[in-house]
Each structure stands twice: as C-alpha cells, then as structure tokens.
Image (tube, rainbow, N blue to C red; front, side, top):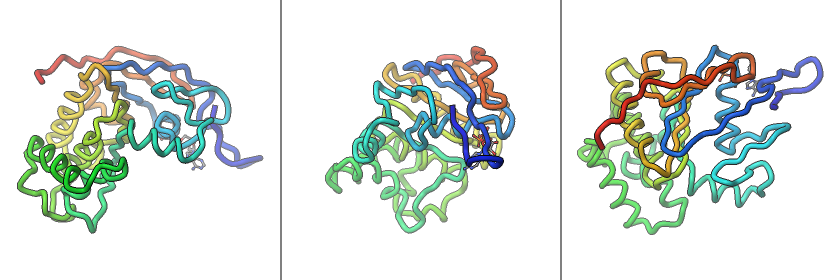
Length: 225
Ligand code: ADP
C-alpha cells in the first residue's frame, strides 16, 4: 500500500499488490495513466518506500535498510532506464556509461575501458567521445541502456523506455533489453503504455486504480544471443 499526501489531499496510489518477479523474465507493468505503475516501479527499485506491506528485492528489504546500505545495494544490483534518458549533459557518452562503475568504486581507467567495450558492442563505439546532445534520441536511449547494464545488475527497471522514440527505434531498444532479460540471473521490469512493445514481454501485469487486476503471459520468443 502506498499513498501520497495527507487528509483531503491524500491519494491512494497502490491499494495492495501481490507480485513475484522471476529471474530470466521481462515483466511489463501496463495500465492507464494514474493506475500506480511508476509508484510500484519506484518501490521495487528502492526509490520510494511503501506505507504498508513488504517488498523484497534480491532478498533485500529496502524499506528497512539505512540510506548507505540502500545506496550500495541499488548501485550494485539495479540498473535504471528512463523515458527521458537522463544522461548527464556535460559528460561524454563513454563517461556517462562509466558512471555506475565509478560509483561502485572501479578505477577510472578500467571503468572507461569497460564502458567503451559495451558501447562498441552496441554499435556506438564511434560516438564514445560525443556529448549526449550530439546524438539522436534513439542513440541516447541506447547509451542509457548501456549505462543501465554496464555493472551487470540483476534487476533492471525501465520507466516508459520507448515513449520518446519512434516505432523502429523503440523496437530496437526493446530488442536490446529483451536480450538482456534472457540472462538466468537477471530480471527486467518495464513500465509502459506502448502497446506496440507488449510483444517483448514474458508476462504482463495489468494495473488499474492501484491494483494488479490481471497477469497475462506475453508473447516474447527466445531471441538468439
Ligand atoms: P502511473 O505510473 O500508472 O501513471 P503513478 O504511480 O504515477 O501512476 O500514480 C498513481 C497515483 O498517485 C495517481 O493518482 C497520481 O496522481 C498519484 N501520484 C503519483 N505521484 C505522486 C506524488 N509525488 N504526489 C502526489 N500524488 C502522486
């Protein structure tokens, strides 16, 4: 359960959710605007605390951890992809991708090499020294996906990752995410209202008015690694 505000201004954003997220799956949270998708994703990612109930993520109970431990676990184990990409504008593409590694204490040189290797594999090696603003939206989202993956987190949370992308570019971004979800020790949770990408889900949790009203199986096929 999660509410915002108090008294007359109180909004009940989550009324009671029972959901398991499984390793090796891409789970989508879908539903109308205001149904609680982002709130649930934020609780799963340890950004927000629920008011009541328990949320265990990789055996961690974020709500009852101190800020330091929470930041450490999040830094090591969670990757984030946002609708607006959220790249740091004054850092190069390679520096942006290296940020999670530096936060986790990896030496700068090693982090830069790892970031570059990943950018190469994403077809962005030639843009490593560019600033984010010099890239197209699709390229920026690929950089953001690289940043979410570079430290090999077990959980990747994506908030409307395709909503600022055209169909073909969004499809490409989802193909990249889909491949990552096939790792046996990793799970992806994707909030979306973009029906065109439902085909990438293993399971789809349909939300309405703060509840999960149905969990259906998606139509994702195994794609070659
Ligand atoms: P969705 O992601 O499905 O659009 P949200 O989780 O963003 O839904 O919102 C669920 C409900 O909580 C909505 O009624 C929304 O207006 C409300 N809400 C979300 N964030 C806040 C906030 N920071 N303060 C007050 N109300 C909020």
